[in-house]
Amino acid sequence: MGQQAINPEQIPKTQKAAVVRDKKVAIETVPVVQPSELKVGEALVKVLYSGVCHTDLHAQLGDWPLVHKEPLIGGHEGAGIVVAIGEHTDTDLKIGDRVGIKWLADSCLKCDYCRQGYEPLCHQALCSGFSVDGSFQQYAVSFARHLTKIPESLPMDKAAPILCAGVTVYKALKQSNARAGEWVVIPGAGGGLGHLAIQYALYMGLRVIAIDTGAQKQALCTKLGAERWIDFRETDDIVKAVKAATPDGDGPHAAIVTSAVGAAYEQALEYVRPHGTVVSVGLPPDAKVSADVFWTTFLEKQLKGSYVGNRQDAVEALDIAASGRVETTYTTLPFAKLPEVYGQMHDGSLVGRVVLDLWA
Image (cartoon, rainbow, N blue to C red; front, side, top):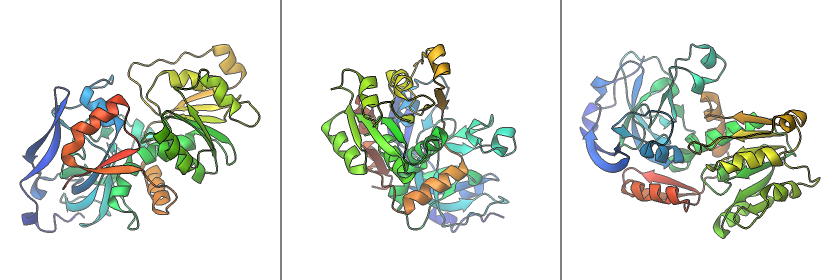
C-alpha cells in the first residue's frame, strides 16, 4: 500500500510551471497538489530535469489533429523523485525512488491492446503534457503504474531525453525488424530523436546512413558512428544517393524517419530495398504519403507507424543508456529558457537535445 509522504511540510504550496494558453507559453507560479489531495493510484514527483521534445512544441502550437487540455502544462521527459504516494495505492514504488515521467501517462492495463503490450493504443490512454499536465513543473502528479524507475547508475539529466526520444526510436528500430549487419537510414539523424536512433541502431548491430544538413550535425552523426552521411540540402537526388550509399546499390533494409518533413516519407518508400521497411516516427502536420500500389506490392515494401514504446520498452531503453552504450547529446538550460528553445525547434536550428533544469 502506498505511503502518503516523507514529510508534507517539506512540499511547498506553490511552484514554477510552464503554462500554455492561446498558443503561447509562459513561466508562471501555480499551486502544488498536496499529498492529502492525491487520489488512489497517483504519485507526486519532484521533477529535477525535463527534456524538451518536438511534441511539446506541437502541443503549444496546437497543430496536431488532436485536442489537448488548456491551460496546459507541457513536458513528458521528466526525471525526478517520488515525494508522495496516494493513500491505498497498490505499487512497488517507494518515497525517494528515482522515476521517469513519460509521454504515456496512463492506460487501463486491462484491454486487448494493453494485454498485448500495445499500451499507447489503449482507448483510455492519457498523455503527459497533452491530455494531462506534464513535467514542465517542479512538482508533477503522475500515475504510479506508468512511472518508470531510473537505474541508479544513470544520472537524472541524462535519463530525461531517454524517456521519450530514446524509448521512441528504440521501439521504432524493433518495429523495423532489421537484423544485425543490415543497413538502416535515419532522416533527421542530427536531431534529438535521430542522434539517439544512431546509437540504438549500432547497439543492435545495424549499419547507419545519416541524413540531415549542416557541418555541425554531420560531425555529430559521424562521431556517433554513422558510416554514411547525406546532406539533403546539398544532394539533388536523395533516393539515388541513399541507394548508392549501400554496398550493393539496392538501398537500406529499413528507414527510421525521425524527420518532421512530409517529403522524407515518400523518399524513404522509394529508396528502401525490396522487402524493406519504412518506420514512421516524425509527425509532420497535415502530411500525406502517396505510394505506388503496384511497386509497393511487387517489391514487398512496408510502411509502419511506430508510436511511443510501452513500459517494457522504457525499461530496456533506460538500461541500455545506463550501460553507457547510448549517450544523449544535450544542452542543460534553466527552466526560464523554454520559450527560446521552442523558437530554435521551430526554425530547425537546434542540435541534439535540450534538458531543462527546473530548479536553476
